[in-house]
Image (cartoon, rainbow, N blue to C red):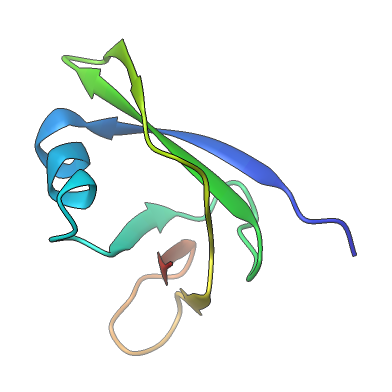
Length: 80
């Protein structure tokens, strides 16, 4: 199965936390059908406008899909 490559806008505050290794997960609406092993590139945004900074792509290693454990249906948490 071919994996997808997702490009996601990320608010500057959280982008920096990820960049410095403090945040190692994402909570997202699963409107892209995220799957384990997909690639994700995070792009920094300020007030909804891309800054031109992005992080090296990472691979989704674990994916928790919503509908259980208090996570709403249609949302997911993944880490790398």
